[in-house]
Amino acid sequence: MATPNGPTFQEISETLRRLEELLGRVPAPLARDIRQKLTRLRALLLEQRSPNLVLVGRRGAGKSSLINAFFGARVAEVGHVKAQTGSGRWFDVQGELGTLSILDTRGIQEGSRPEEADEAETPLDSILAEVRRKAPDALLFLIKATEVDSAIDADLDVLARIVSAVDQAHGLRPPLIGVATHCDLLEPKRTDLHLPEAQDPTELQEKLRHVEAVERQLREKLRSREELRGGLVTVMGVSTYLSWRPDGTIRSDERWRLSELAQVLFRELPEQGRLVLARVTRVRALQEELATTLTHTMASLCMGVAVVPIPIADIIPITSAQLGLVAGIGWISGRQLDLKASGEFLTALGVNVGAAFALREAARGLIKFVFPGAGNVVSGAVAFAGTLAIGTAARAYFLRGVSAEEAHRLYVAIRSSAEAHPDQALTEG
Image (cartoon, rainbow, N blue to C red):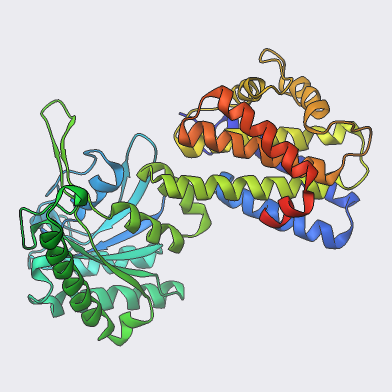
């Protein structure tokens, strides 16, 4: 699998570097705007990293289950860290499509000292040391829905200590999300939240009212602490239940509102961590949003460079950027793409790029098609339209699974519409 340090991303990095070199020929106001877009593309594509998440909650709150639910795979064993070895440490949870960096706070409430710790070190001491060492991107406070009003004050004390430690060490208050787990166990127990259309409407509404009551209780508890109030983003009730057969296949999937929780978390993450979360969770709405952002940013970037008269040789990085856009969208979808494969996709769209050509020749071939009528000066509107059409077709193909033929029709329609109505396309972009 390609990584941010692999060949595909090295080629994209080189393309962005060459685009930056062109900025010396671009008027200052436009150059500033292009540089901002390049900075965002670097953050999304080249500076991506694992999100750093702190999961706070007593043993049994469902921290490992939440991790598994995000990945949709058994990547963290439930109860995999015993109380007596519960020293807080960051650890990477690796899935097929990415990694999350997790600080598990198991051990805080067990009252035991980790075997590997110094005599003076408690589980909380080790956790505070870890958040001082590496700033979390978000805190998730987990508690069973049936235990929201059960000795929660001690848990909130720990949470407040962690928030204070992060603030003192890094000068920031990480976003806090309250998560009430095991909502599937609320009454009526036989009513399935994950299959609402198959439930008795009256009983479903009863269960949802119980979820709302739990959320309200948890929200009031979190807001009652001055240290927590300012960072609280939201409170959500969820179900994370997944069961596996001995062969590793999923036997039962009762996840509920995990996509919504992932979307909330996505909004709070720095841009460098968003792409990894979208890949790991496979939440289509997140993948679509990221792909749309990349498309519009790249289209605006290509337009900004294209409005300035430059030699054909310098247009090649623009077209290479479009190939990189396809590779980036493929990466978001979980595919393994290089720029040659991106060229093959463009060939399937009808763009005149031979799959066997080297990248430079492929880029030259693209110029005639994406920028029809381009001599030494490329129309910014046409550059925008071509890039927008390529990104839109790639989103439909890689994220929604449309056929190559349908992607081709979409490409032609979007390009024609954007070229005919550039003002509308620019506004939407």
